[in-house]
Image (tube, rainbow, N blue to C red):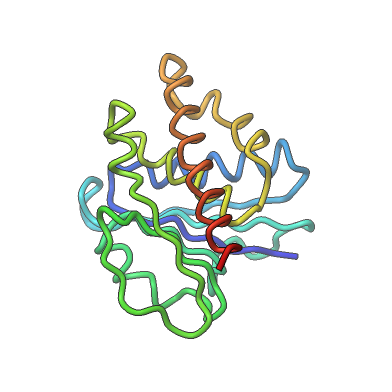
Length: 185
């Protein structure tokens, strides 16, 4: 089984870090193979950027995504640029503070979280990416939250590790709440 994921947003949001953390968690702590690539717009900060992650139970022979099953969009420009590449049966995760999506097409499952607002409430909007990572972990169930958090040391500044874990937990708890509400329907 191979899964393709695109994390997208604007430069400076920690989009590349989302794929690095996820790839490290899966490769080192979940016994999977993973590859990660990244791309930036013309400017490093402020323009659309993305990181692409592929993980599999087997060796990955081609490191680039073709039609991602999961798209995470944390900016409008990134959503507009990458949404059309998402598979018709894919999962779309957006930051509801920054993205206004079009009506969902095909059989795409769409979930939203105010990750930027949650980051601000926790003390710094820069941790919105970790809020989104927790949400991503809850919704997609690609691995456990414990496995994902094992990958944080070394990829987030040590003095902010506790804050990043708190942000991850906030996003994860929100994702579980959304899934529970979905089951109730």
